[in-house]
Length: 356
Ligand code: PHE
Image (cartoon, rainbow, N blue to C red; front, side, top):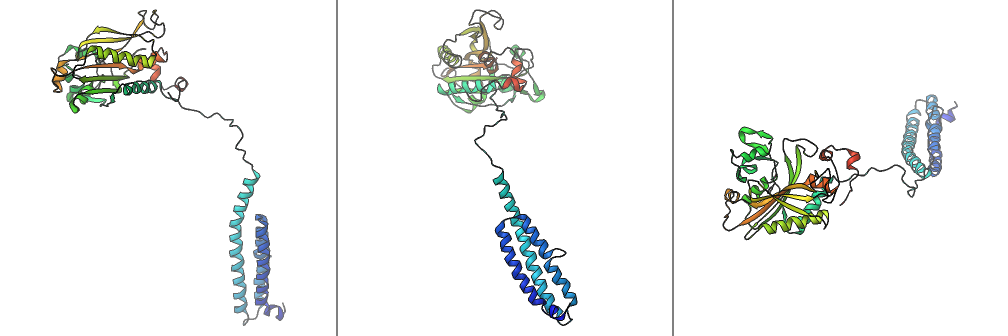
């Protein structure tokens, strides 16, 4: 290396910086990642221009070295910083180019089928029933599924030695504490009457539990309880309400029938039958050739029940009824096994609509 060359190092660094800036501008304008890499190799690579300058520094005289070294280092830092900034930009260029190159046609039809959910038949029927009750001016009320014997039995005119308790096989949670799974939604009558004052027009759907399992009984099932308490309420009011909402759910040709029956918490009491939807009352296997299907119980609230909640039975009267929702879903959707409702089979449940 000649002296003139080594002495010119700071000047060469300045010239190289200018060269670099010019090429940088061109590479930036090209928006090409490859050219960024080429630029890096050309200046910083093993045989790059900045590297060559650094090598020349070795031939530099001692006096000149500090100034030349500083100039070349500044150049190197400048080049490195610009190249790495451009590398980052190059990634954005590439992404933009890829998105442009892969056209997305949002007007194309979807080929994969999108699975859609549906509502459970019990949910469908419960919604329909509640809508009809609301239309008739009833208020929806809730009550506990785990309850004390008092609400489920005693206050409903079934003291502990009452033989009517044998009618229902009860799941006890803690028998010593008289805590059980409610066997019917009638417990809500007691909770409600203890908390509110008449007049009452209440509807209360819920889950109930009994030790029972066959094609028409499951250990858990759904009931809907309704009751009205006011002055001058009669059995005829009850029959009118039952008829109105059964017709609303099953159609205006649906016939209902009340049959005298016994429940300790009503007097008089009756069982409610719906005309069989399969055979329209002609008689078939489902209705055991009677033409009728039993869906629940009803009656005028017993004076002893009013006494338990401290209502004056001389002033107030009321009716109550409780129906199996699952039974009604079976009738409405023509199902032959109640247990289907609780198996959670996708192929079965998928047949029901998403909306009512
Ligand atoms: N709770 C009764 C049952 O589950 C039905 C019922 C409700 C009867 C209200 C009369 C009045 O069998």
